[in-house]
View 1: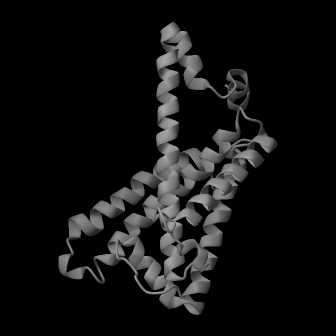
View 2 (view 1 turned 90 degrees about the horizontal axis):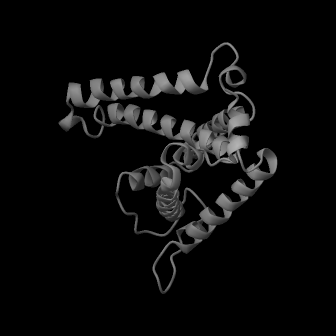
Length: 223
């Protein structure tokens, strides 16, 4: 089935169309469940992203303005505003480029690829941590075998659904969803380059950011 054509036919509301077909008037419950899920997901995403921007602003990994908090509400309002505005810009550009029926799928592909890569990196980091700073608690099964299995579990669907060594994104991901895969690859490349630059230019800021992701609170002024 042509995925783009199907999304266009249903207006991007695949779940609602499915509910109408099998559950008739019960589709309303599915619709409200989707609204609730979207609001919850959006709230969690903004909360998570703004907290990361705040921590990186405080550590000096990002401009210090990101580390500001609201005088009255004590929330990282700069990070929140940046996240909301950036998300709106990405959404509007995606809809303008691909149409509202498939824009969500393109953007979702990008973030799904990135999320899987982040989980794989986390598994690899676990191996490194418990062979380094956490070596006093090192356990072969929990801290080596299990993370390796985790990487393999994530790598299989990542490769099967999004990659092909023969033609990369053009074969597995058809237009316009290949834009999501290409965007994810570019974003990872940017992250690798910035990390390399910071390793030499601002190693102390990178170290504070790393410890911040581990739960430690940096109380000093931004670098």
